[in-house]
Length: 160
Image 1 (cartoon, rainbow, N blue to C red):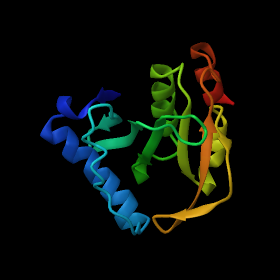
Image 2 (cartoon, helix red, strand yellow; image 1 turned 60 degrees about the vertical axis):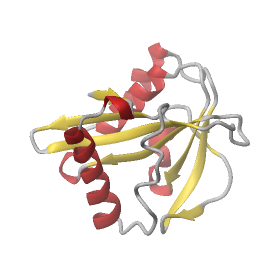
Image 3 (cartoon, rainbow, N blue to C red; image 1 turned 180 degrees about the vertical axis):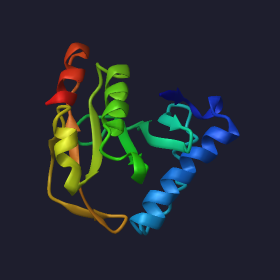
């Protein structure tokens, strides 16, 4: 697993995870919103990914907003993606665990595609509000309060 900020990324690392995001979100899922939103470049953004011989196998990013959401959460997990040939291996869970482990004392919010809310629920996220369409796909806002999962229980959530 790799973790870097924008200034620490190599051109090859950046290309590899942008290719994965483009392949899945635009080619496979037909997302109808802009992928390059300038959030990747923010100094506080953390990029987490898993590499294999074929390139980036899984990726997510952690953003920090200056103004908390209505749920008092400033940290956002987003762009969670796993390459088609590696799905079902628990790679998204590994990345989520690492993001949570690195930020145990902060609240998180995310926009989950509705069919994967169970994944995030295992890590203490709860649905907040109604479904909505984002990027042409049904989503729901999910929230995880600060301190909800201690470091020792993150791995246990993965096996639940």
